Image (cartoon, rainbow, N blue to C red; front, side):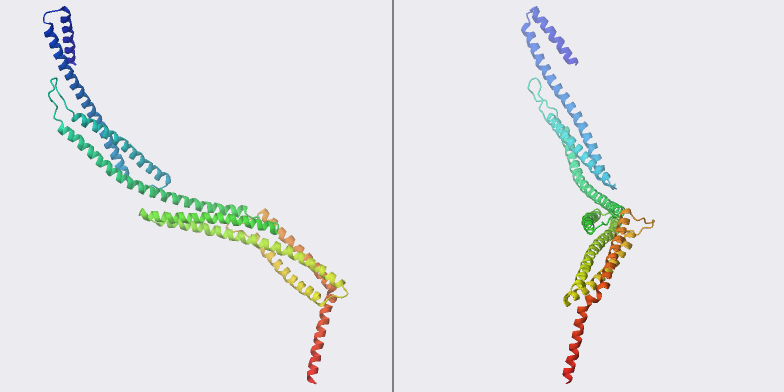
Length: 416
């Protein structure tokens, strides 16, 4: 600053002397021009010096920032802290990625500033007369170069460790995700089981309704089985990941046991529900068919009894059908009794007091009503049979008599 102030003062005085017109004008101009050349060269060298100092300070600042970022990244990638859940694993991965991106940004800045500083250190410097007066910055240049190489080696090392750490964290994240979703599958199965026990109690009022409910139940069962299979696949994947991460496999075993327990309990509920729907459908179908068969049997007996020429084959068919109907009646009544007992019981054994659902009560009442219809139709069938038994069995007795007479005649013929 003092030099430039002195230079400005002398330049001003020279201008004044030139304006006054002294005889030494040429000498003053020569001295002034020489001073201009020297001072401009000095100013250029000072500017270069200032740029060098500024660049050095900036380089040191960004190099220190990169060094701190590398230390933070190294500390993070060497951490042995285990992420206990999905959010913790996601945070750890995000932290490593964030530090890695910060290191990458600062590394580029350091490389740029280092190159600028080395260019300044290796630049030529000449005096006002063109003489090379370049300072010897060999040691400074090598120091900057070594610093850059050291930072680059540290970065490469951190990048390698960071990739390994991110891979491990990704495995941990997959592990925690699998185990979380497996826990969710267990929870879903338990909730579905509870929903089915409490709300899936309707077995239908007719065979058609029972059949439709059975189809809906099959879809429900398929969904539940898919959930179980999905949970099982998740735990198998989690087991592989635990072994890969050298973690204890006991938690995986406990989760697998819990999943199997939930599925076994739910399976029992599903099987019981399916059995109730199947038996309900079968009972109503058999009962409706039997009511129709008994009505047709009554009609056949009445027609046969009213006929003056009942054929032996028709009579035999009526008798055989009556016996079959009686057997079907006994079987259908037993099925209805078994169904009512089954419906009155809880779908699964529970310690709490069981309360029969309203729609289950209606189903039991319908079974009882259908049994009463069967009883009335059976009584009507028996009454018609008793009234017409002799006439309906007459063709069969005549045939039997003819058969016995033929046998006797045959024996007597052989004797003689």
